[in-house]
Image 1 (cartoon, protein in one colour):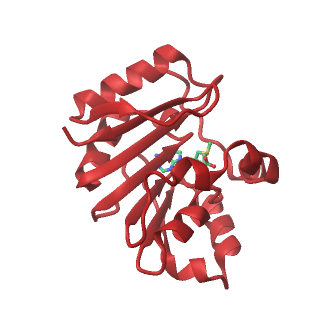
Image 2 (cartoon, rainbow, N blue to C red):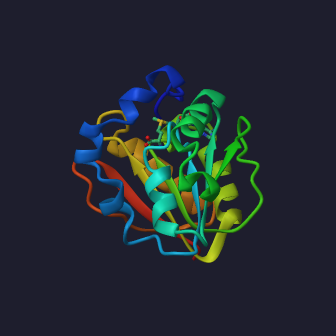
Length: 183
Ligand SMILES: C[S@@+](CC[C@H](N)C(=O)[O-])C[C@H]1O[C@@H](n2cnc3c(N)ncnc32)[C@H](O)[C@@H]1O
């Protein structure tokens, strides 16, 4: 497995900028998974690069739970959506170390660039499974250099051991992706 270094809030700007938006258009990546009225969870939301588009896609009847370990990341997201229509669609949730700690049922869960930062991945996947709606989908995306093919397959083995079914995720250049569901 990789080291479990948590991306500091001071680097939030590197995660939320126009170049990334051009390379990883959140609308294009997430469109197949999100519909109006859904409840979606953005695990390790960081400064909310995906959260805002998720909130747009679930519409006024939907909800996005934006979870992060670091208050600094949640504060950046709060500032970003403050006074916008997205503010009413996003719930900010501070995770505990080793536990998401949100109780609910999500139609879609996004785990983008976060799984490798988590020490006990099998426990995390078990918690995610418990939060997933029976027809829900969990999209895992891991970065190309930081996470080796071996580390990613170990992570998928942990997901399977937790009871999730592994399917193919979308093509994102050089990235490792998987779409996980209930068996
Ligand atoms: C590399 S950033 C990615 C942020 C965002 N998903 C994106 O793609 O822009 C990883 C984020 O995961 C958060 N994180 C790490 N471990 C976590 C945990 N156990 N629970 C919730 N968030 C966590 C970090 O605080 C950081 O904001």
